[in-house]
Amino acid sequence: MRAVSTKVVENAIYEALISATYKIPEDIKKALKSAHDKENTPLAKHILNEIIKNYELALQERAPLCQDTGTILLFIEMGQDILFSDGFLLSSLNRAISRTTLEGYLRASTVNDPLRRNNNNTNTPPIIHLEMVRGDRVKIYIMLKGAGAENVSCLKMLSPSMEIEFIKEEIVQWIKENAAKACPPVVVGIGLGGNYESAPILAKKALLRKIGSSNKNDFYARMEKDLLNSINKLGIGPMGVGGKTTALSVQVETYPTHIASLPLAINLNCHSTRISKIVI
Amino acid sequence: MKEIIINTPLNPSQLSRINIGDIIKINGTILTARDATLFSMVKNDKKKKMNDLVLKNQIIYFAGPAPGPGNKMISSCGPTTSSRMEPYILFLLKQGVKVFIGKGPVSQTFLTLLRKNNAVYLLATGGAGVFLAKHIKQAEIIAFKELGPEAVYQLKVENFPTIACGIKGKSLIKI
Image (cartoon, rainbow over all chains, first blue to last red; front, side, top):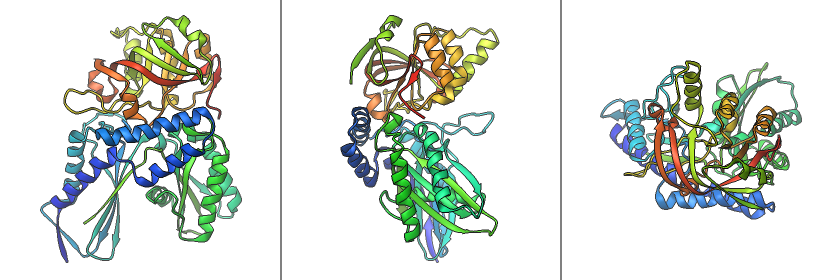
């Protein structure tokens, strides 16, 4: 067993969260620049230019890229040979988030009750997905997820006999009707398989992948490429004003499923993708 | 791309020159409001409780800013999704609001209401919060302080950049 202090985790999460608010990941930056170069309609170029200026300014001023600093998500891959010391892990995660909210100028974007909606000004609790893995390390992916894109995500329980062409149509149709609300150019996360609650988690995990990376399986890598082509042919463009860039990437993740089921989850991320990773 | 400057206090006749896709830069004062703000405004109105705000000829920005360091009130302030504000549009138009700033598409009903009231919908770039905050020179909370980021912020803006998106019954964003 390896002993890990929860205080070490707290500080690492704090640092990673603060920098994730103002530092756009390199892969997104590259994709946005290349989108800017490819666009030839003036308004699409104008908007991408503002987006590029925004990430430059955010880095210079260490100011949140987007005022919606989002819901904080933690994907924890926990090595089974770790023993945490110095207190309860969840409390230290909450403390890291409260400190970041105060010191990193995050917006208080979480209400503590869905109907009575009181804001506790701490952005806690986070949403946590925990997975046990081999080894004595803990890897945590941190995502600050804006609500504009989250609000136009969906789960569909499709028929298991549905052919891939129809599934692709289903996805493209959803993007056509909803992407303009999600701050395009978007990143499209697709979860296929699993069940009612696991497909959306797969779709979200798909968003953690680097832009331009492909599914490990050729069949799904091809599906990703086809979907990206069809989506960018829709002409929605940056912020919906028309153009070639509606999505920067389509990322599909799959899981075995029941003989009677074919869950499809679509989770969108805005161009202001804020993801960071720590390994302890 | 045609560029038009709008100054406040707003003279609604300034809006008649605007066409879809024009770049509109705003100088003067705008007010933020979003989900909880608008819900509270309408609730107060139903209770015949006076809202202190004067909305006649105002510009409403659907936004909730992120705070800044020291005495800087705002570090990042981009628009939120306008379609969520649709239930409140008629109320705001009746109060005299003439310009809405937000992001994303709006319904045909929204566009028709804008046309009937000689009002316009402008698009600001979503996610460009720091870039847009650069055009905010001063900020002050003037109502619903208890709503935190959803309070009404009065913003003094300079060349605040937007695009004409909904005007004369038409929309730049095609769905």
